[in-house]
Length: 121
Image (tube, rainbow, N blue to C red; front, top):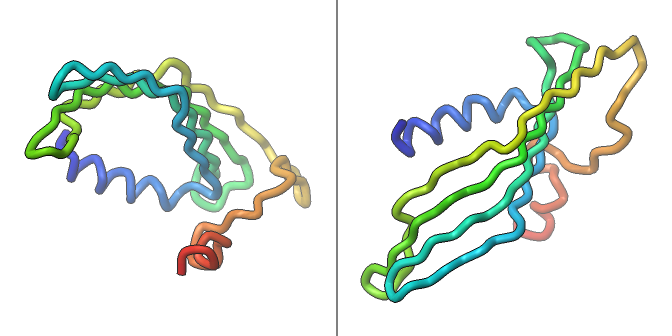
Protein backbone atom coordinates (compact mmCIF):
# COMPACT_ATOMS: atom_id res chain seq x y z
CA UNK A 1 0.00 0.00 0.00
CA UNK A 2 1.37 3.41 -0.91
CA UNK A 3 1.29 6.29 1.55
CA UNK A 4 -1.31 7.99 -0.67
CA UNK A 5 -3.54 4.88 -0.50
CA UNK A 6 -3.11 4.73 3.28
CA UNK A 7 -4.06 8.40 3.70
CA UNK A 8 -7.15 8.00 1.47
CA UNK A 9 -8.29 4.95 3.48
CA UNK A 10 -7.61 6.70 6.80
CA UNK A 11 -9.69 9.74 5.81
CA UNK A 12 -12.55 7.49 4.68
CA UNK A 13 -12.54 5.53 7.96
CA UNK A 14 -12.04 8.65 10.07
CA UNK A 15 -15.56 9.89 9.33
CA UNK A 16 -17.15 6.85 10.99
CA UNK A 17 -15.67 7.57 14.43
CA UNK A 18 -17.69 9.50 17.00
CA UNK A 19 -14.60 9.98 19.17
CA UNK A 20 -10.95 9.04 18.89
CA UNK A 21 -7.68 9.71 20.61
CA UNK A 22 -4.11 8.83 19.73
CA UNK A 23 -1.12 8.83 22.08
CA UNK A 24 2.48 8.22 21.13
CA UNK A 25 4.76 7.50 24.08
CA UNK A 26 8.04 5.91 25.17
CA UNK A 27 10.34 6.46 22.21
CA UNK A 28 13.71 4.77 22.10
CA UNK A 29 16.11 6.16 19.48
CA UNK A 30 19.57 4.91 18.50
CA UNK A 31 21.62 7.21 16.26
CA UNK A 32 24.62 5.87 14.35
CA UNK A 33 26.18 8.61 12.25
CA UNK A 34 23.65 9.66 9.61
CA UNK A 35 21.25 6.78 10.28
CA UNK A 36 18.98 5.96 13.18
CA UNK A 37 16.42 3.44 14.34
CA UNK A 38 13.56 4.03 16.76
CA UNK A 39 10.73 2.27 18.53
CA UNK A 40 7.68 4.27 19.67
CA UNK A 41 4.75 2.88 21.65
CA UNK A 42 1.23 4.05 20.95
CA UNK A 43 -2.38 3.63 21.97
CA UNK A 44 -5.44 4.50 19.90
CA UNK A 45 -8.99 4.09 21.22
CA UNK A 46 -11.62 4.85 18.54
CA UNK A 47 -15.41 4.74 19.03
CA UNK A 48 -18.12 4.23 16.39
CA UNK A 49 -21.54 2.69 15.80
CA UNK A 50 -21.35 -0.96 14.77
CA UNK A 51 -23.28 0.03 11.62
CA UNK A 52 -24.87 3.17 10.17
CA UNK A 53 -27.53 4.59 12.50
CA UNK A 54 -27.14 1.74 15.02
CA UNK A 55 -27.39 2.36 18.76
CA UNK A 56 -24.84 -0.38 19.43
CA UNK A 57 -21.43 1.24 19.83
CA UNK A 58 -17.99 -0.36 19.63
CA UNK A 59 -14.79 1.05 21.07
CA UNK A 60 -11.74 -0.39 19.36
CA UNK A 61 -8.52 -0.16 21.35
CA UNK A 62 -5.21 -0.56 19.57
CA UNK A 63 -1.90 -0.90 21.45
CA UNK A 64 0.89 -0.49 18.94
CA UNK A 65 4.57 0.11 18.26
CA UNK A 66 6.22 1.90 15.36
CA UNK A 67 9.59 0.46 14.32
CA UNK A 68 11.28 3.13 12.19
CA UNK A 69 14.47 3.57 10.18
CA UNK A 70 15.74 7.12 9.60
CA UNK A 71 18.51 8.78 7.63
CA UNK A 72 19.97 12.26 7.51
CA UNK A 73 19.76 13.74 4.01
CA UNK A 74 21.07 17.18 3.13
CA UNK A 75 21.24 18.04 6.83
CA UNK A 76 17.66 16.94 7.61
CA UNK A 77 16.36 13.75 9.21
CA UNK A 78 13.77 11.82 7.19
CA UNK A 79 11.83 8.61 7.68
CA UNK A 80 13.01 5.77 5.41
CA UNK A 81 10.88 2.87 6.60
CA UNK A 82 8.09 2.36 9.12
CA UNK A 83 6.69 -0.92 10.38
CA UNK A 84 3.53 -0.90 12.50
CA UNK A 85 3.32 -3.66 15.11
CA UNK A 86 -0.11 -4.22 16.67
CA UNK A 87 0.56 -5.72 20.09
CA UNK A 88 -3.11 -5.72 21.09
CA UNK A 89 -6.44 -4.99 19.42
CA UNK A 90 -9.69 -5.40 21.30
CA UNK A 91 -13.30 -4.36 20.82
CA UNK A 92 -15.61 -3.26 23.63
CA UNK A 93 -19.22 -3.47 22.41
CA UNK A 94 -21.88 -1.35 24.14
CA UNK A 95 -25.52 -2.18 23.43
CA UNK A 96 -27.31 0.98 24.48
CA UNK A 97 -30.88 1.09 25.72
CA UNK A 98 -32.89 4.24 24.89
CA UNK A 99 -31.48 7.18 26.86
CA UNK A 100 -28.44 5.19 28.09
CA UNK A 101 -24.89 6.28 27.44
CA UNK A 102 -21.64 4.56 28.31
CA UNK A 103 -19.36 7.48 27.51
CA UNK A 104 -19.78 9.90 30.39
CA UNK A 105 -17.92 12.87 28.95
CA UNK A 106 -16.36 14.16 25.77
CA UNK A 107 -15.40 17.82 25.52
CA UNK A 108 -13.79 17.26 22.13
CA UNK A 109 -15.60 17.95 18.88
CA UNK A 110 -15.11 16.42 15.45
CA UNK A 111 -15.31 19.76 13.65
CA UNK A 112 -14.10 23.38 13.90
CA UNK A 113 -16.05 23.92 17.14
CA UNK A 114 -13.36 21.88 18.94
CA UNK A 115 -11.59 24.04 21.57
CA UNK A 116 -8.23 23.65 19.79
CA UNK A 117 -9.44 26.06 17.08
CA UNK A 118 -9.63 28.83 19.72
CA UNK A 119 -5.97 28.18 20.51
CA UNK A 120 -4.85 27.71 16.89
CA UNK A 121 -7.33 29.72 14.76
